[in-house]
Length: 75
Length: 189
Picture 1 (tube, each protein chain N blue to C red):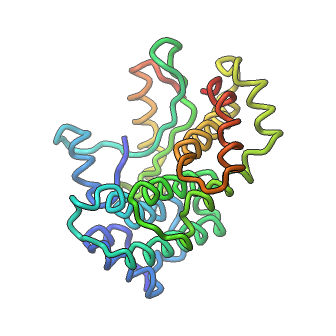
Picture 2: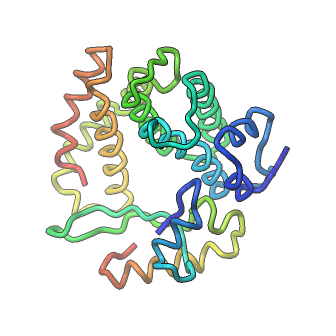
């Protein structure tokens, strides 16, 4: 989940398997497979994907939280 | 000379740094997210150029590396002063650039990104109080609130990145200080 400079669109396309990108941002997770994982911080800060359009930040973050939640990682 | 962060992606690395040096900035109301895009556009290709000099397309000269690293230093200071990027994030990004510069074999002793300079900045924030708290809370981190775990994780990030630079440090006292942190780091999330 996230963009990288230089070729952000290309990187996001790889992460999404070539499909449309639904969300981008940053997540900080602690733990391991043994201990389990803790979601510490999540944001829609991606640098490129949303830019300054604050109206999109909340819905994008919710998508991220839901996606991690399906993996048992909660923020 | 304001522009959209997306426009930077179409520029070459040289053009991006020229944009900044010519006074290029985002619009005054740009927040953290677009400014993160600027930092990524300027510094991440520079890290790549330093790490993989033979395989890169732009083939920057040593003088260009020196100038561009000075610009990166300006950008980090600009954002930190305006609270558009946290001190922790700026420091971790400085460490990553310092690591890339050290590994490149390029000698720039006056650069803001020498291992010694950047690790001294880390030493300034890894205080004895912070280490004492980490020693106390590290072993029980799974019982803590997220904000406390995140604080411990940030400390671990700084220690790990500084530790990677130990062999590049000319200052033996700094190297010994960083080495002394590793025991604490081992119990952090």
